[in-house]
Amino acid sequence: MTLLLALQYQFEWSVLWTAPYGRWLLQGIVTTLEISALAWLLAAALGGLFGAFRTMSGLGPRGLAAAYVEFFRNVPLLVWMFFWYFGVPQVLPATAQDWLNRHGGEFVAAVVALGVYHGARLAEVVRAGIQSVPPTQLEAALSTGLTVGQAYRRVLVPIAVRLIVPPLTNESLNLLKNSSLALTISVTEVTFMTRQIEAYTAKGFEAITAGTLIYLGLCLVVAAVMSRVERRLAIPGLVVRTEGAEH
Amino acid sequence: MSFDFGVIAGNWRFLLLQGLLGIGAFGGGTLALALPAIVLGFGVGILVALARLSRFQVLYYPASLYVQVIRGVPLVMVIFWFWFFIPIALGIALSQYGVALIAFVVFEAAYLGEIIRAGIQSVPRGQVEAGRATGLGYRAVMGDIVLPQALRNMLPSLVTQFIILVKDTSLASIVGYMDLTKAAQTVNQREIRPFELYLFIALVYWILTFGMSRLSRALERRLRPDQPVRALATDRIAGPARPPGGRET
Image 1: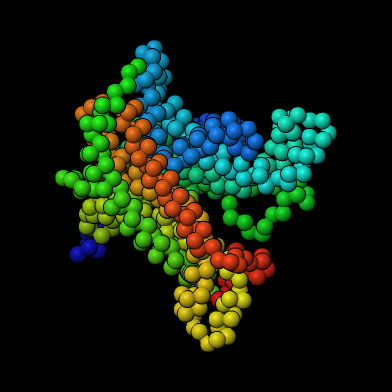
Image 2 (image 1 turned 120 degrees about the vertical axis):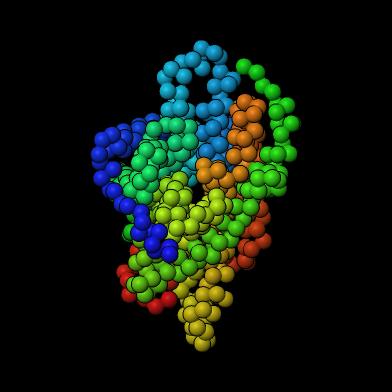
């Protein structure tokens, strides 16, 4: 009985490349990459700044960074999506609301939600990276006359960046996959497009298979690129690369 | 720009009872989904980890493929698999709860399995050998010697993943399951106070997950033995990415 029902489903893989559905998928991929890239830049900036703050001795920056990380990291991204898209415009001035409505507010909200959420997660990665730099490096840098800021910028951060490439890859992949949540605020990324193709053609099986393969492919590409970055950045003798490390 | 936190005062009962606990006309509930998903996900995760460490290729390869595929796909996609595939493949319609629970267990077990595998590998190989030398079988060695020690070693990452799972349950609202997020959406449709409502549930989620991380820290301290179980890189049960047909566990 169940088998019979399964056989009644007519596969029609051609929906994936006939017009306009093929174009929708391509547009979805472009949008996914756009959100992910912009959110990644925001997350890297926030993560770098607050991750460094968390390792400083001053109570002010450290407390601020701890508050940012603990609050944004421990709340579901979906809630942040709704918060930034529906909630924040409510408290903005009318002119800003108008501007957002005319310029694709859902895209901006998705980038900010993803960027701020993953910034908090990246801050932890950065903190762990900085803390794993031997303290003698800071002492040596300070003793050559560098200020604390210079020591961070010129010595600690360059070393830490190399140490954190593997966890950074992991977080970048998470960010890419989490960009799928932007569909809940109507950003036309890959998942949104696969749902739309399903709605128009009732070929859910084909559409979702395509979406799945697209994400798998994108993740493989990102992992490959990051692994190249890791090899390029490696300082001989500093980072001992474990064989077959998980990305 | 105006705030009206009266909307929370008027709706907190619905948000917490219905959304968080699932007490009310809609059923649902974040915890009613999260707790079974944690228990089942952990159970399946142990099986996945054992399969990933198995010397039998029929177990090792399917488990590895499963883990790699799941880790390359967003959770939303996995939820849609079960939302669309099961009705087509089996000809039965699952409830929103069923879809969400299956999707979470399938998704999280891949991540939990990797954490458990790392935990098992952190137990010194001598423990296994000593167990085998006293005449214990695979099940006794795994169940009574390796897993209890592994559990203690992996507790921090395990709890982190459980916290992620609790946060992930918010995605069940996408298929209409009445959890905390859906409850806030429902109230918002009537009240149109998104800023206050979403900030409030953000706080509820935060208390929940922060409480979990505090609980785990307390648990770690209690479980900490006088002599921490530590393993040298060369003294593992099996290395990562081990060749199939490798050493016996």
